[in-house]
Length: 325
Ligand code: IDC
Image 1 (cartoon, helix red, strand yellow):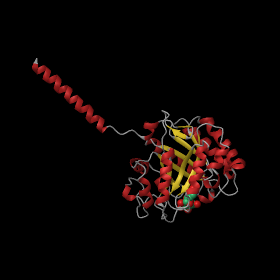
Image 2 (cartoon, rainbow, N blue to C red; image 1 turned 180 degrees about the vertical axis):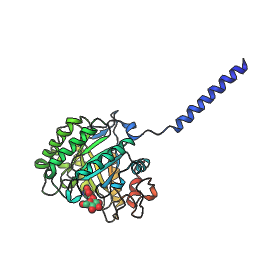
Image 3 (tube, rainbow, N blue to C red; image 1 turned 120 degrees about the vertical axis):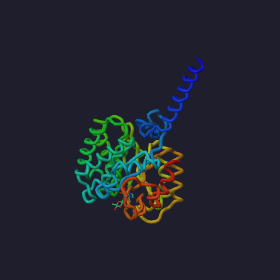
Image 4 (cartoon, rainbow, N blue to C red; image 1 turned 90 degrees about the vertical axis):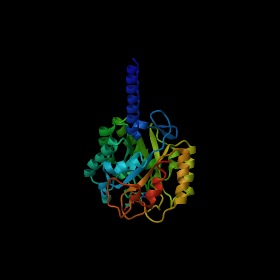
């Protein structure tokens, strides 16, 4: 009898130990497992439970120039460092490498990020083509294709015009363009978030706030380069926030607006504090080793995967220090 009890107790103890071991060895949940479907509530992005969340992302460089970083091992390295979102930048201007052949590259990127349980921003990277209407037809086709393919997933965000600039206004150009593209996306994708660029290289969120779009699950982008954009741009963010506009910083760095030059950690810190206060997400430009200060990877590092913090550039290391905070 006593022997029987001993056996039972031993078996119990062993099973408790095994369960404990299994649990500590169980894989940590991925960002998408933790948060699920994102949506916009009030001025914020919220998770499936309605809790405010802060996206922390990295953006590729133009995928025509640096396609080698669009791979699972690379994305996983950033996930380990605390990143939950990958932005895939497809320049829409032919002179900046645009080609419909790159749609496959975008899809590879979406699949890699999805496999890792990360959020992924599909970025139609208008820049030198200034007005989103310039390549509107192509944009409509591109986003139909992407929404058809991925509209049923819960980890997709669409950024429909990176940085409108030049002779472009919110009312005349961006708003009508956005209405058209959003309508196309919503044919296939009813709920994933759509990011809309704002005038002056996605700085004029205060102007967008005067006449926002009527659709659901829309956020407006604000881009900053901390060494160039200081208090005046932070003020625009405050104005937009007060007016009730949901904002996402879908691109930033702490160097100057050329993507190069000196870093301003002091301005960067002011930005980070403000974004944390508002729970606004941010996506760092750029995943490459190009010899410019916004590149997150050291120019002496030729690895395209399995990256460690020690492989990061000065801006990369500074930005990475905010990912786990
Ligand atoms: C820059 C790249 C640079 C490239 C250039 C092409 O860093 O290597 O030669 O584009 O035009 C943006 C843009 C982003 C820019 C970046 C820095 O969204 O494409 O990348 N920037 O200039 N807006 C503000 C700054």
